[in-house]
Length: 174
Ligand code: ADP
Image 1 (tube, rainbow, N blue to C red):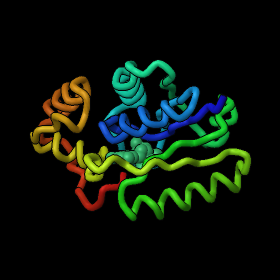
Image 2 (cartoon, rainbow, N blue to C red):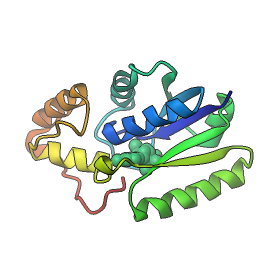
Image 3 (tube, helix red, strand yellow):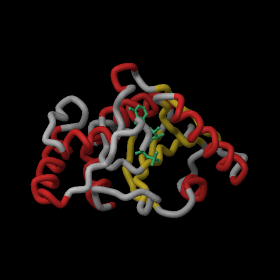
């Protein structure tokens, strides 16, 4: 029985994340999708909102649980007895970032393996940054995120009005 951890910021969760979670859940007996509390990123959604939306978006998968976490990912993996960390790869720029993180994590915890899933081709372009930028400009994000995420983003950008900070769309990695 292999237990896996899929950590991320999920600001917001999108179809690319859901696709990776669905595929990983088929491979491992239990998958914990863990929403990071305080990443070094400026975020649109609070930890509670990200947790709620991620949980709602994955509730159709029986062997998935969604939790929040803070601190080192490998420490959290140990705490929940996960032997594997799951990540997703889209473009080459992802690879460099994930490669460095994997080596660092392996240095900290040689007993925990990192398994990277290659994105499904229909989601290669998809990142949380892309979703936020399109939504902030009033564009249609149907098919990129679940309905509940669409609604929350529409409401959030309506509330922000002119005060929103538009994240530049420089690359597909968050
Ligand atoms: P983090 O801040 O940890 O990178 P993200 O929420 O941005 O958190 O991403 C979590 C994981 O999901 C990362 O491994 C990222 O590469 C992966 N991911 C993001 N978008 C996609 C996508 N469209 N297809 C496959 N994997 C993706």
